[in-house]
Image 1 (cartoon, helix red, strand yellow):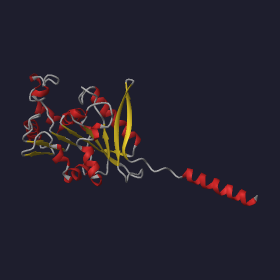
Image 2 (image 1 turned 90 degrees about the vertical axis):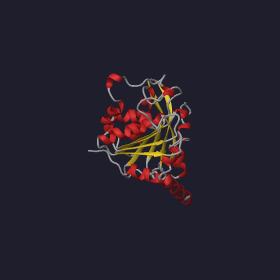
Image 3 (image 1 turned 90 degrees about the horizontal axis):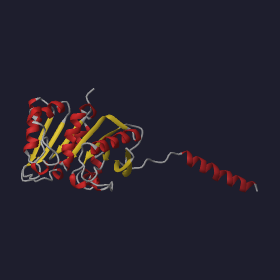
Image 4 (image 1 turned 180 degrees about the vertical axis):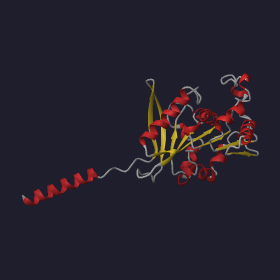
Length: 262
């Protein structure tokens, strides 16, 4: 009887001790949801395998292109940054947020609200470094990054835009009208708002969807204002310039070295 009691107490104490040990945090690509005005939207958060809560982690907010819009909460991790993370996770010691714009939406209005709400929720849930929040986008997401960074330049430590634009190309001029001429040079206006953020721009010289002149003209305006901006144009590369840009390990080393100005 005594032996049985001792055995029971041993098992019980072992269970209590195990319950007191905190569970390791979830890592990898995690499903998340957010709510705006009663509507729910799915998104993904990538958490590196080595994540722990003893230090603050840099954060990337990634904005996908028009082809990844939808409501599955998954497709936005397939093209661009998500695929590079899967191939080279050692390059990304960071939390990466993958919001998804709904069908027919862009990274303005509701799309912008979704992206920023996903960012806010992630900053609240994880041990994130608010001084190392980065904005990265491709194509429609490159445009979104340029727009959002102009509106909240104090929020981001750096920005990367691949085949983005300031003035909408002819292919989408019907759904995104160009800035009014009364506002002056739109590239100068954008550069005035962005000049305090370290920026890397990328484009393919053979891009037939968004002309490379969009990135060129923004880069010139930024350089005229002595901004920390660098433009890379890939010869003989079309619209999918993100494949080459994101494969460059030096880009991510540069990005994670940036901190928000005090």
